[in-house]
Amino acid sequence: MKNRFPKAAKIALIFVYAVIVAGALVRMTGSGMGCPDWPKCFGYYIPPTDIKQLTWSKNRDFKKGQVIIKDETLLVAKDNFKTSTQFDASHWEKYTKHDYAIFNVYHTWVEYVNRLVGALAGLACFIMAVFSFSYWNEKRKITWLSWLVVFMMGFQGWLGAKVVYSVLNPIKITLHMVVALIIVAVILYIIRLTGLKKEALKFNSNFRKLMVFSLGLSLIQIILGTQVRQFVDEQVKNGVNASIMWLQNPTLDFYLHRSFSIIVLLVNLYLFNKNRIENLGFYKMNWVLFLIGIEIITGISMAYFDFPFGSQAIHLIIASILFGLQFYMVLESRKSKSVTI
Image: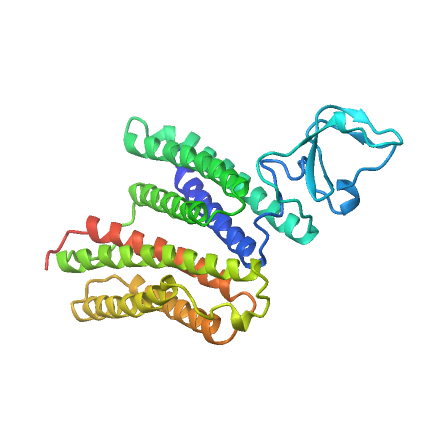
């Protein structure tokens, strides 16, 4: 079981990133309220594919908890029953978490897939935690951290429910994203603890400090980015359907996000050059610059070319991958102290 743990940890990491990808697609398509309840979807474990399933009709069997939309209101079945020829309100109660009562089959299934991937990620993290007991006598920290990931995945699921109940409250969405990144960081730390490969890296105190600073900048950028995305969502909600108008008169967050990108680029160019000149061995800096380049390109395309299809999702996914890569480099810079500069 110990030999399988590193692989289990990497699979868990892949699934957590898959959740981030699915979440990005949910945001890109505006499907966050595709399932207005949680953990079920309109009261079903497998969501409806047609509005008829959410419409009252006579001589139809309903089970407790199933949902219909009637007079632009969500109604929940109070018990198991069969409808008669007339609507009987005594069998129904109003859904009280919120008043969002719209069905869009496309949005519903995008959100459902997001939840399904989340459930699979939770299972992968649980399996990793079970396997971690093989390290109990050797590196107990690995076991504790693995079960911490399971706890955080549960918290993430609970937070996802709160996001739905709040009808996509921007603060809760941002917290949801930050928690996902924390989970990524903990799993990467676990993987680092179990790694046997010794990289030929040189320890450099200034390089390490600047790497930590760069990581902090990336996290701030992601948080600012979620706020900019929320502004765009509000524009759409307010009836601004033309993408060319979404960033007209933007909030301060947009200008901060744009300006921070320049700082992020300059800091990482300095790190890249320092790594090259002093031959520190951090070849992942090449990937860091490549990902930052994609971030800048997708950011420019959204701001000046009317949000090309997929650009929002790519922007968010690359940002989360960049965060993970930088965090792992911070771990490498701390552990590799065979040579001091």
